[in-house]
Image 1 (cartoon, rainbow, N blue to C red):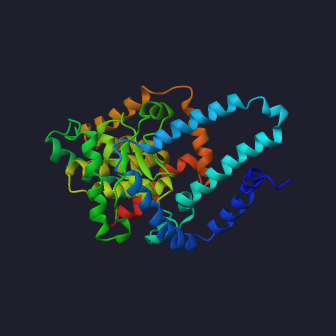
Image 2 (image 1 turned 60 degrees about the horizontal axis):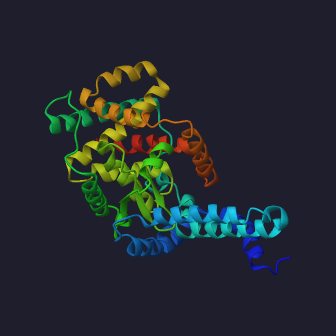
Image 3 (image 1 turned 45 degrees about the vertical axis):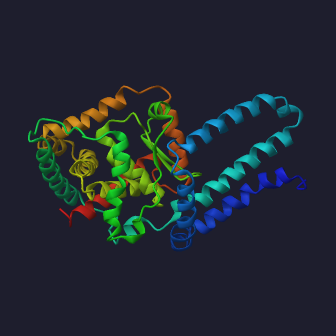
Length: 354
């Protein structure tokens, strides 16, 4: 039964799964030997190989892979009944190889030590702490907004092209590197996705290709959102797989950038998450706090909402549900809602910083 190489590879997915769950349960082991060990070499090699290309090699790879799979299904459709065992062996051997490659090149980062533990930040916070930090973020964001616009009712317009932002974004990590050496980001590999339109309809603003370590940013999203989204995807490249942690590191990288527009984008990003959490706890207080946010800041928020509203479609929930299942399968408690868990980190970080 196991003489066939494809069958052997197909069945390897079972021990792979068990081994990953076993090793993944030891967060310190993953942090030491994978995230700060093997991954440091594989990620840099991949970025050296593909980063210099002016287009996303990973996107082209995905497109060719999809075409190949469709072609294979059409050619081999009759084998499903005539040679079911061989057909399944080929399918699951392919899945096993992808599963192995995903975890070797990036996926094991899902099992590293949680960021709040490595930074010494508490996980829980009180409503009083949340409200206090939110008020401080309102003052900070309003001040930066007014410094840029000189008018509290005018939204911030980024004076950069999206290509410029891709080049400027790593500077925030260069600043953070002075305090946190492990955040050194070199070589660079950030690109606009070739599939930005379908990506938008799916409801995503960017993603990291784990097989090429290229960071893809949706080229259609508003320029105001480009700094934090780009910094978020760089965080994934640096090994922060959890979405809340990538959100937090992306926010820090934006506010530590020398350009004030990046700083504004970072603080406005943090404020939006915190004020939304206030709404979950106290809708009436939320209304009061929102009124104290500059109209121009709120216009930037509306700009983003309006953008996503025009791309809403019946298939989006399907993609979101699929991605939610993917996150939960990779040890991300709460699935897609884990994006919002960033407030835990923000409250404990900003209460001592602003």
